Amino acid sequence: MLASMETTGDRIKAALRLVPPGTAISYGAVAALAGAPNGARTVARILHSCAAAEGLPWWRVVRADGGIALRRGYGFEEQEARLADEGVEVGPDGRVDLGRYGWNGSPKGR
Image (cartoon, rainbow, N blue to C red; front, top):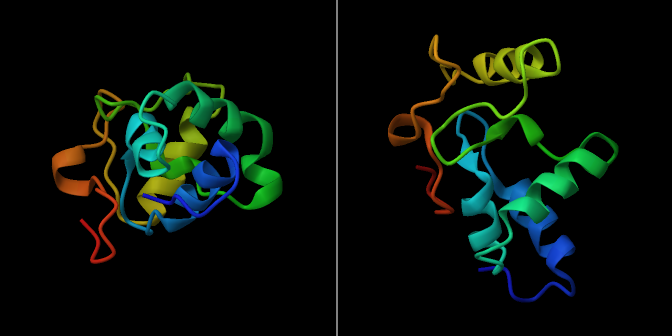
């Protein structure tokens, strides 16, 4: 847990920066890592409002079922391509296998 940061938003941003390339994590898992276990929607709001400007790896964050939350034609394809560039496969159902690619917050990776 990242308890040393001041605000929940700061802790969430710090948690997002830790997600390594080639992995994916759910909104809820990011929130839990940041010490806000019920903060999945806060993660989504932060990603929506400042991910690009702050260089946050938004494409590594998926729904709890591994699904890409963005709709086709509205960012889905970009997220899918960025994940693929890192070696993360997105299935035909638009989901990432979190059992294979999921990151649990461990410094050693998956």
